[in-house]
Amino acid sequence: MQPEELPAQLPDGSVLLDVREPDEWQAGHAPEAVHIPMSALVQRLDEIPEADQVYVICRSGGRSAKVTAYLNAIGWDAINVERGMNGWSAIGRPLVSDDADSEPYVL
Image (cartoon, rainbow, N blue to C red; front, side):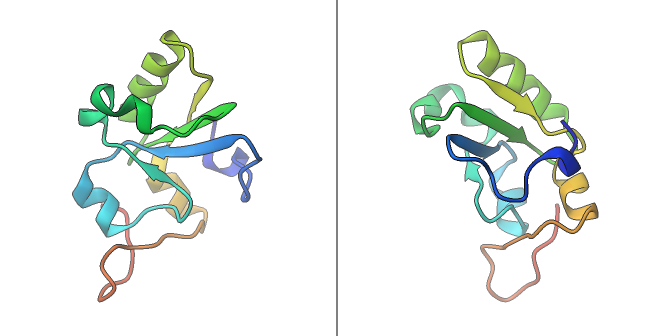
């Protein structure tokens, strides 16, 4: 799925899962996203909110494609957000940062 196809307001029963590393997340992320780095996903599966649909996003779509395949293989209904946060940012979707002193950006 392209970022343009993702509803601006996520439907009830869905979640946006950001699988980037902590420094990427801190620089800028989608306001409603849940953060579980790909490197910690297997150990933290129980932290994914129960959802009918899990949209998985990273920086450019590579890591999220792998996580999507894994989640689908173990029973989740996951969709990869192609072009990732680069695409998200390029179409003007909102970003927030954990650093109050800087503007959010995609790292």
